[in-house]
Length: 209
Image (cartoon, rainbow, N blue to C red):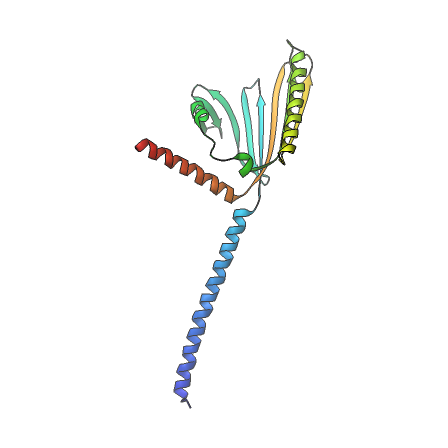
């Protein structure tokens, strides 16, 4: 039989071992929760809504991006000598060169990577000099909408396109309001960023050779 001192030492050793495994088990559980939370964040759907408004008289395109009904970024763009000036605030603007836009290649398939659920186009059109022009525009818009719907249905697309035209008589006006509803997740964004970075690295390697 073990002595009292040996029993105490043996019991203390068992307690230490139990404590070590308990702490290890808690850490493992925490890591499991962290991994699950990260996976859920990556695949959780994010609802993006883009608003674009063009006014011919103002010669500006106003835009607003919202995520889950929260405003993300907004402002307006206008044509300048250097390209397009995107005004994000009254004192801050970003100049985008038209040459860079023309030469920029698509880094991802927009329809495949980002699910566009609905496109809504509203045009306000009127002409004093050529009254027939707005009617031709409305007719062309309906043809485009019908063609888009037929192609989308034939290819299994889920994008709903709606086109409405408001005609004005005896008044020159041209305004376009575009609304786009899209769904994506953070995993898609990470893949897109990775593709762009890989493309940039590939271009840099080609230039250094």
